[in-house]
Length: 87
Image 1 (cartoon, rainbow, N blue to C red):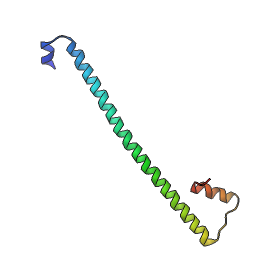
Image 2 (tube, rainbow, N blue to C red):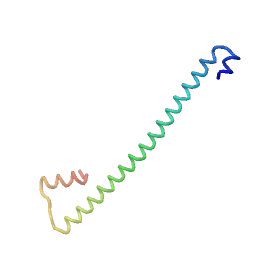
Image 3 (cartoon, helix red, strand yellow):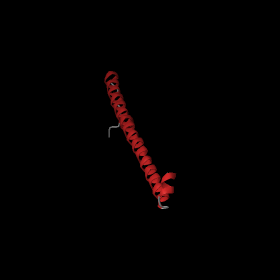
């Protein structure tokens, strides 16, 4: 950079500052894009695990009700539906 500055005009300082700022902006955006992609992927995996856990617990709850002949009434039915996510 200093060799170019000695052999050319004074606008080279502005040129190199612009190049550094654009490069820094590009690298920050690239880093944020990668972080966002990984965050979205992990969030989707987490949501899928939650849905699988809800489905599993709903199946276990239904199996337990069939075995015990328990019949929920009124407010109990509302709580059970809320727990398994069925409305």
